Amino acid sequence: MSWIEALVLGLLQGLTEFLPVSSSGHLELGSALFGLEEENLTFSIIVHGATFLSVVVVFRNDILNLITSLLKFQWNAETKFISLLVLSAVPVGLVGVLFKDQIETLFEGRIAFVGSMLLVTATLLFLTKYAPKQHKEVGIKSALIIGLAQTVAILPGISRSGATISTALYLGIDREKATRFSFLMVLIPIFGASLLELLDLYKATEPAAISNAALLIGALAAFTSGLFACSWMLRIVKKGKLVYFSIYCVIVGMIAIFYGLF
Image (cartoon, rainbow, N blue to C red; front, side):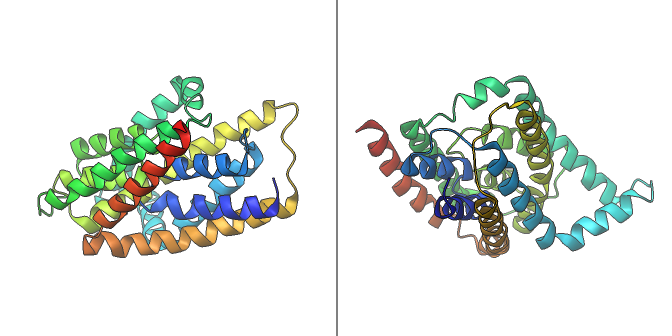
């Protein structure tokens, strides 16, 4: 992997992890365009770690507040919120562990499939126009449903942020609270996925070669673009402009389907 490829893939990871356009789908498309047939585990761990760090920076005050409240060992609004975050991660955690090999087969350059899933993402985003204008809080039931939406977003082309925020809006949850919950809930799966990737890297006998410079460039690109995308997405959801990303997903999805089939 060259430093240019690392830069582009790092930017794609950081931007699309938080914008509702599917990071996994765009990484599949980017890898196909560069002719990268096999994922580099070291690079994957590095860019996911950089993405994780960008969320921590943006939500540093929220995270510090949650950790402080947790250490008090009291049941309050913050510890309840933490329990809901953990609950939302259960579905994707179970599927990720039990069906890891089956999931990996979906990431084998199936560009037409990625395109079709981007069309599904476009539909989810477009339908938020008709979501009920309510201001509910995230509860046990809604946290589990949003967690199931995150599980579906394992499919390359289904946007994690798009699926979770859209689902929360369909449930009548306040826009700002839906976005905050969506971004904080991703910390647990990213951390878990990174641990699994580290285990795979440990077992690998001949990891794909990649220079330290390319790793650093990819990490910086993912972190910087992640900061931008996370902050931008917060403003976008407040203004109710998710439908614009629906148009983008339709365009990219149709191009991917055409490219994959022909």
